[in-house]
Amino acid sequence: MSDAAVAVPPPRRRVRRNWVPYALLAPGLLWLVVFFVVPTVSLVSQSLQTGDVFNGYTLTWNVQTYVDALGTYWPQLLRSLVYAGLATVFTLLLGYPLAWFIAHRSGRLKNVLLVLVIAPFFTSFLIRTLAWQTILGNGGLLETTMGALHLTWLLHGFESFLGLVNLGTGNQLLYTPFAVVAGLTYNFLPFMVLPLYANIERLDLRLVEAASDLYATPASAFRRVIWPLSLPGVVAGTLLTFIPATGDYINSVLLGSTQTVMIGQVIDSQFLRVLNYPLAAALSVALMALIITFVTVYVRRAGTEELV
Image (cartoon, rainbow, N blue to C red; front, side, top):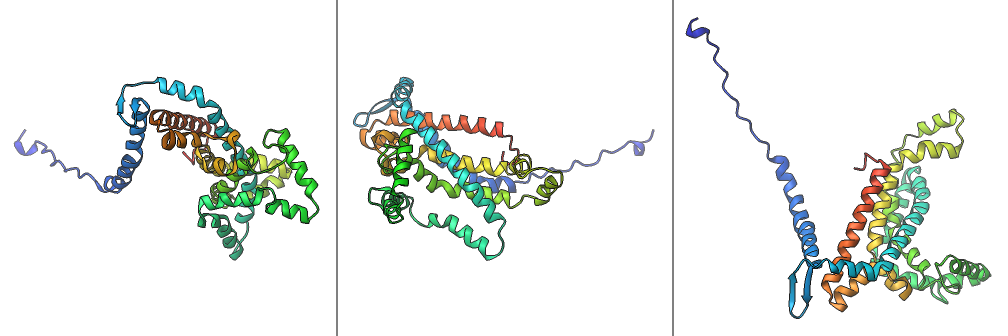
């Protein structure tokens, strides 16, 4: 065999790495590291330290702070979950029909309705919540309007009903659990409506017509066709509502009483007034872990692959 017959291997091509995707991701990753990872690590570290604000803190891995925090403030933590859950349910009940109505309008009316949904964002969160004091207070807008319509009996009946279900005192609306839940529902309603609208607008109504052709009742068509197809929007809306509502404290401060204190109010007090930083950090970490666990279980059970 001659040397010319020997196969000469082709020259190896240099593999050029494409760094463009990594360069595009770098700002976002840097943002997450600086404003999420570093604060989270600092918060966890603070929760495991001992000392005081005058003599400084030392990392001693003191997990007893968690035991003390959860043992003392579990009612406020549980109350926050209940209030946030109620507000999420109410926003879903109000937001789903509203999103459906907007999604099936056309032209200028749809744009006007969408602007009305996001219009509250043009005002401060604090101002919007303070407005509810004027509406729900004794002699406020609601009581005055009901009196002018000779429906005061209906208002008093509603207050008595709230007292029976432990959402009120039986004789007023402001400074009750109902006021806190109503404030949460109002403030976070756009977070429910917008994801639902984006999802419902993409629904293929021919599937609903097909269900009707197969003799499905409207209720059955909603349960078997519309609801499963709109589930990604429902999950996104419930998460966007429940997560911030759980840690909210403005509504409980302005609309509630000492009997409606939420965990966010406790954390604020421990950080800024009591200056017990480890306890406040432990409560924050516990709340974050609880929400992450809830979201993980909820998304897995919902089975919304489009969302995750």
